[in-house]
Length: 427
Image 1 (cartoon, rainbow, N blue to C red):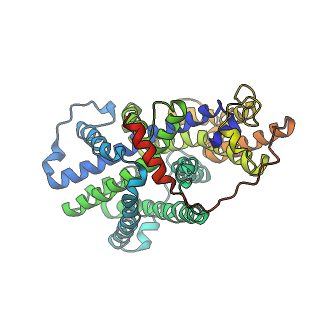
Image 2: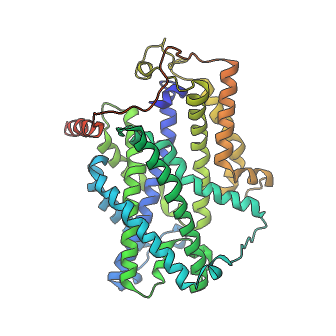
Image 3: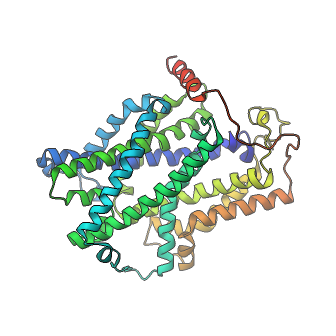
């Protein structure tokens, strides 16, 4: 509903559609990663699975074994998709305990096996295509921001259940700042250590599951795959299926609830052909930078609208009203300022995105370098253009509304929504 304050009552469908498409693609990508985890686990139990006959051509970017495990992992998730996310709170709590311990163990193994920090972090930076180091650095920054650009827009899907404002602040601060930073350090450390220990290239070692297959310990391989698959399930449900369900219910509120939306998300994710995205580190980073620029534009508009233009003043009744005289209805339900700002924000990054998708295209180096900061560029441009249009053609802002602040609540919205969702699903 917050999108309606910036894009309009009808224009908000456009904004949530973009997030919904990203959620479907991410669900497929995460499920393919989960399938790889499942493949490692099966191979650890039955090594003969490593010789599973491949009937697919090399151009498919996926083997028969990987495709089989991908569909098996989706099937494994189906029972969990039936449950409301609130019923999986213990799964998420277990994930917050297990994964940091597993990550720390993997980090210690990398340092010990590589004989300390020295050999690991002395690995040189090798750039073969002549791209400046600064551009490569910002490309990595954008790749790191990419997955979190989704979470930045998904937060209201979960923070609205919080009873106290402090619950929202500390969970986001720890989750997005501390744990995400640890994941980045862990990935860089294990990749560099694998080059030292096994002599493999970074193009292979970037995937921790590939590193796990190099271990001469089948039990370690199995539990590594189990831990990673456990993390994938939690992330896929919380960050992808829930957001898509909420977005789809905005389009079809009479027919779609959380459970139906989750199953539709799982079905559509197959069409995302995630094996092409996961084919290599370059293709994966191109995907992250590509969708981050669209989500960055949305974030810039929403932040500017709420914090700068409206100064945290919203007419909550108007957000749920179809009255044409409401402050959030704008022109025929669309706020042209948001759409102009959105397309102005993504336009400078389109040449770089085209080159990232097709390296044979001749694109100016400046456009490619600008694309390395796609999320930041789109966020800033969208915010600035939206603010400028508001100054030139001011929006109607409710001055009689109180400033929105977090308030304590005694009502458990999770239980209320879960009950209503169960009734709707049974109809």
